[in-house]
Length: 251
Image (cartoon, rainbow, N blue to C red; front, side):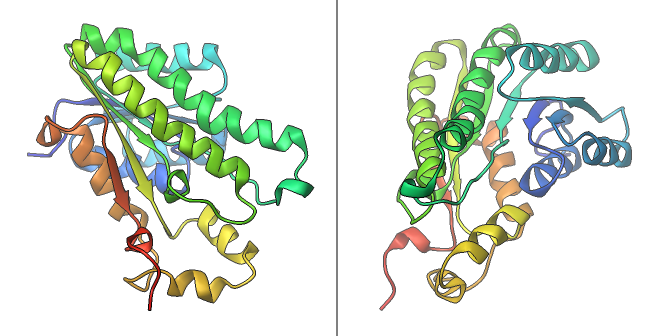
């Protein structure tokens, strides 16, 4: 028996990194999964390895209402219902405020914050029809604190944290729970690029009390818990998985 047996999940940004880990872990836990991305070759490769009985891929730009409608429709037509949304898709631009073009700032907000909002909006109807569900919004430790060069990313992740709380209040009446997950240093291409862009990558690693980056599956297990009925009394909450970074400065 898997933790997610009988669940149908929609996961965004599932072609690589944490999203790919979420897709594979959800299938391993018994869920049927529809996942989207704009990286079609990578997404189709992941889906082919899992089989269409358990998994379907769709091209999905999270800033597009039409793409959201198509992804939700695929989930309900292929698997009969929709129980879980994982708002995972996100981008990052590293630049200090004085150097960042406005278009870059807006693009990060569009993908990370507006995309998350559109997702919650799109799934409310089908989840209500299914008798409830769980929305897991992937934020970041940058939704709690700031770092040089991450103004757009931090703004978007603070927004995800706030929207999660609003949605939890609005959707509880329909049996829909909404929580946010706040990873720290996860061993993906995105976090490696951030570490490389910082002036002292070694200091970044030393800021983690556990002294290492997380493997993506360590975050996927937390996401699966929130998607499952085991977290049935958790909504509007923030779940941090950062190796202790936010515990405070080291001494």
